Image (cartoon, rainbow, N blue to C red; front, side, top):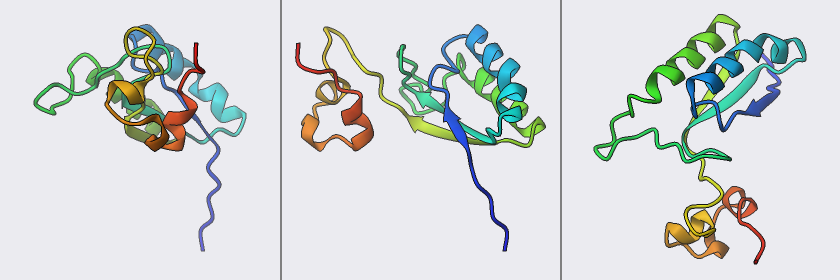
Length: 122
């Protein structure tokens, strides 16, 4: 039986810019030296930005695709596991409204992850 313990991080801003992508790749060896063997990057959303990795026709956005490819190649070269997520909703979308409300969902119905991103009442 093969056992594997994943110790990972989430890099929600990795696709925001070429500089952010370069910074992540530059530090992968350091993370690995501390035992981090896996990480996640998402096509949509980020903690401090609003990344949309998909076009209206559901094809991949050419702005972010080369960045994701570079991260995948860097992870592979280091033997790290990379989880690629579809969506990670940003914290706010216009006028300080939480993401769930923007999407028309009742905040009580949001997933635990989404609820944790809701701001406290003003």
